[in-house]
Image 1 (cartoon, one colour):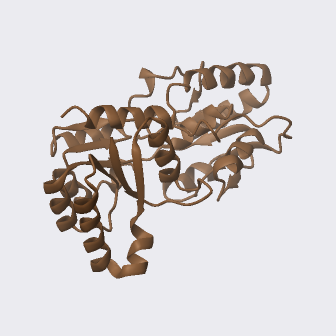
Image 2 (cartoon, rainbow, N blue to C red):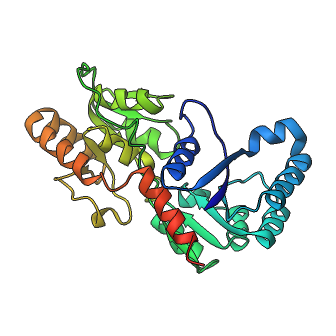
Length: 289
């Protein structure tokens, strides 16, 4: 399968799209990555759109895969759909599934997303919508050995919205770790006894899978569909509110043997959710017709 993957790419896997592009290649696809943001800086938005449409016309791709692409016009989506099969990949939570994204959902043959509640909304617009777990990069999200536990409790990511109040309600100091990507993300997981996660509109980010794959102990609020794959108290631990969160932080900091069992189970439970599996599902779904 010849695939044009339109997204944002880099050289050091900070961009998830880079990891996904490599996984598509490992899954057997012939993939061309098109950095639509860089190309807009080079050619301008109109020039970029014209260049992209012409590229699809000239190269005879079997599939054009969009990663969100909120800066592409509807005209581009309509034009390319007339030429070849198209699929939109949307990884974000429901609150960002806005009018622009919903309109573009209508303009593709396939829509694939990471969150269950996004899937429910998308199927009302495009029946050919599917849930595909974003997962983790098996090449970089691995346990890092011989690392000192520097933090009792940490959160890897940006602190905004409801997350601020949730962290402020924690009695223990919480280390906020930003700009940790690829191997540095896995190292930050290893440096923490407890890795926190806060879901957005009841959807799990790839942080869940990356933490568990790197052998971290994950303490998180719940998300839709979690019970299908992970067992609370066995693979990870779910908290219900601020009081419960504080109680569980103290309990697990005082019971490292239990923490070790849960994080070991979690690493096993998360193994099916690799980026390679993501790529294979995308290929299989879009090859149906």
